[in-house]
Length: 148
Image 1 (cartoon, rainbow, N blue to C red):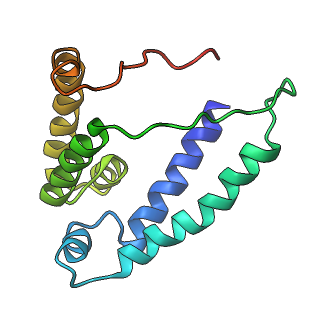
Image 2: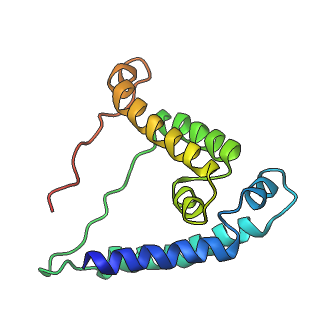
């Protein structure tokens, strides 16, 4: 099964690369409102994913036959702060996590700096969240990958 997921990731990376969705200039064009194609790609992903999630919630079963439950997530101010930080990083580097790996695969060395920044940011999040939780009134952080 892990080989299947590696192949699926490779196909996804190829699609990102060939569509231009991982290209720095393409992404900067989106943020500068000079190129609207990426908005179409993101919109198409939402339009295609929404019915699939609805079907999964309604009819989805695990391999053991249990119903799949996708709990509703409540919004909180951490979503706003995180979204702002994510947007700033995406705008500056021209990459979010998936395209970082695509750009590394394409041999673009500057993507290594973005990867380092993403790893440092993830580490800082882990260290700072407990200290910021009370002052910012953030929800408790759930640990682990679930019961599976």
